[in-house]
Image (tube, rainbow, N blue to C red; front, top):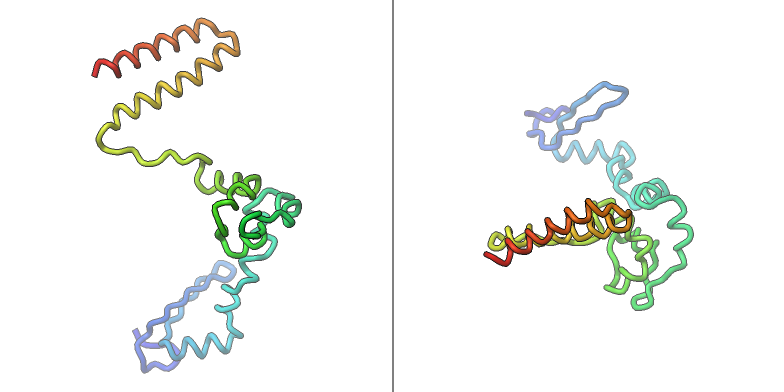
Length: 172
């Protein structure tokens, strides 16, 4: 495909824009594309400068309202990083930052990963034993809840299920 602008060189830059529902495609060689970009007062560079990614919209999208305002003065005691610096850099300064910014990081990590705790990968060998162990742990949590709610019949059933799982695990 030839360049739309000069018509001589092979088009290597392909731009698609959609304005008011109308799709436009343009194909330029690298020389003409750089001239177009300079002529449009560096549209591309302005899209990716620091102010685009550091404005208040993104801070409010990542953190609940008011979380940042109350924590701008909090600093990591080891490296001195603030939450504002973390937002700008996108990474923490040291391992102590995790505990220093715990209140601000917990909702962020939960939103990104879906959970705050890391459960790791399950190895191929022994996966069945691990699955049974996790099931026993879950049943024990349910047992505690059933006793708290005074659902003693349900608690007895859960207790029996835990016992049978533990016996089957030991018999292997």
